[in-house]
Length: 276
Length: 290
Image (cartoon, rainbow over all chains, first blue to last red; front, side, top):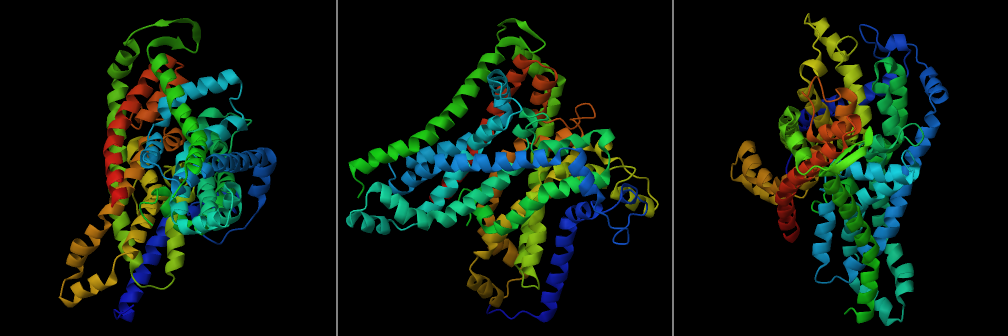
């Protein structure tokens, strides 16, 4: 940093940024805080900040009464399952587009991106009816498949931009040494591609975990992941702030932590490599 | 460099992804088209038949359609303007030297990871609720009447909630872009006596144009299909005050059980999204060449 920064300016920037940062974070902070209050305390007037009787009761109640663990597992299975399945399909595709690009590679990539622009509601009815007729409505399988297809373009794109950065000379050298295609992938490419694949996995789990169109429309009680389960709190009789907060905190905590780790990759993944 | 052998292998490796995506696009698309010309109600599934364009007529002449179209535009544009403007300002601020930059970044980015149903419910109940919400307490504390956000200004409230969710995304991308700005250029301008404002206007903003394009583009894709936020806060109401196109099609097909008209609505949504997409793809294509 060549520019001289006055201490005063730095202090002002710090103050401003922290104020705004805390304001933006406040709803999440408040949700977490409320989850430790009793129901009466949660709606007390004036609202209590830290001086209340902290309790873990809500977490116990949510876990016991509402089948919360089932919905949590649904979220895990659906987001991880769709990510793994997507990866199995996308890795070969991205690999070949990055290392054996043809004339049409770029068109194929753009076309894949364009499928993301198909509004989900345009295919809601067919997917709903197909699922119903196959008897997979409200099943994890249906959601794994749908979310895989939804996020496939993003997985392919992300992997493609990462694979592009692996120098081709290394592959050539491996080939000169007589490596077969299989061992080329297994021993040369895979180790170099692991960081890119890891970030892709992370981002994709986040996206799948929070997906709330298909999960709301294709599930009822059985396969509902947390997005759909939390939505059931919107009915008036579910107006229990403390319990809603506890359920919400548990639903967002894992992904919040994962998200913070993947900030950098997030930019790249969500902008299809256009901003790095 | 690549042999015929590896080219053939490459085709095989792309095939599954391409075939699946093609199927994912074409099969439901054809079905939507098919149903959109059929009479098909889930409550009376036996009475079927071709109805020509009647479903489209019904959907397009439904007063709710115009409302939904306008609401969709207002929602998308409102959120875009808020997030891009605030995002640029916030990114510039976060780029300044400060204490604890990493922590502020973490605080700012957090809302993006909150699932839509959670953020909508938290805002609806704990902030905007006219009896127990924090805004109501704040209003009472300064002697004002509590305002019932979601019934008196439903669309604006939803714009607020969605903006809160997407501001982190815009900020993060714009911040990443700002950090790639050559600091020597800035210093030169500063030495030449350019004011902070003109430095921002003539150096930072042009540098950000590409990132802003990308933000607009990606957010538009997601904002056109906002659904969960509306479902759990207002159910599209009161009346159709906060119904967007996505929600209208959902309501028509899965709440009114009219598959035919819902499908016609789906086709309309696809056509409109495509008009937007054509613009967007051109911009992305250009950006990728650059």
